[in-house]
Length: 373
Ligand code: SF4
Image (cartoon, rainbow, N blue to C red; front, side, top):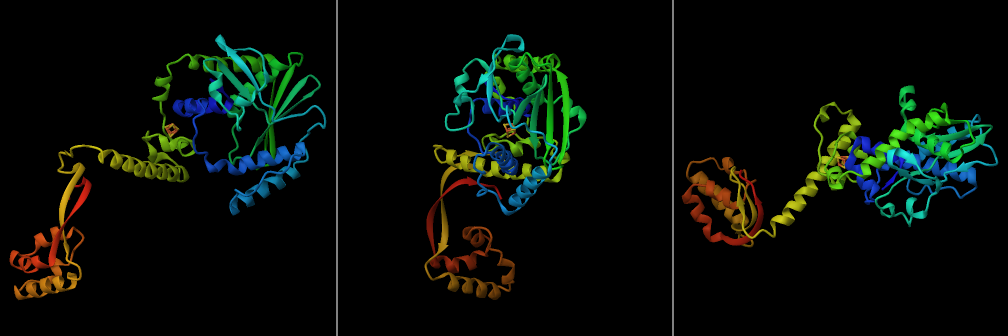
């Protein structure tokens, strides 16, 4: 299967999401990444001379954020980028062998790059890893890798120390350039205008990456269907492209922060309405209804109901009103007509309801779910 550092991270959140991503299943991209994608494309255009990305799909607030990040980048004069020998957003792939050994890193074929020819199934049963550093270059005996960050968060030093993306990128480039001594990975945070870096020897990066590559290889030997049932719902479901096709729900949502809880609640509403539509569709082809212990009935039923004959509603209500007064009853106690007309008539005294029978007519209607009141 085709792996990337993003898919490795996703696998820690939810194995099913990671599996479906590896298989190239189509989903809906979370729009929270829109500004970040724009900035990556904008930096790419600035460094390569390509046309600037379109802003057409950015909302007003996203445009404001994007402009502010562009200004930030332009004011970060300490970012050293050599004019020659800099590789920008180049993709490479390597087969991963048993034990997490890297084979040979080569420029990625079109099937491994998101675009019109994207087809991760081509990897078949082999474990293939793809990297795409934002930028890298050689400086003396050091490979320098840059990664553009646009998120709000400022990861801790320990998070960066174990960052899987930096480890696999640095290990892959170490493998590609065995004559180099060190690799420096630099996170440039465009939002906060800061840079943080970690430098290690080629061998250190490789040793850190090997268990990650090995885990990818081992996972590809596991039972696919078992992985698909391994869902780990949580806050990340709000960003998952497959949330519409996944019915897993999370316990412990009470502890989620407001924004995540809102996303989670929106997802549940979407799921509920989708499940309800699917249930209705299925019940319509049942050949017999089912009665539930609480008295509700699911499945198609033909029900006969009453309705006013055309133009008789006003006269009928007047007769009911007058008849109730005539019986010394308070007509306002019968004003609640939220139930069906038939149920309302059942509540009327028999003598009153008999006076309007001639103004009513029966009609048949199809009921798919009859809830017990
Ligand atoms: S919606 Fe959540 S549980 Fe379902 S696949 Fe996505 S991340 Fe996993």
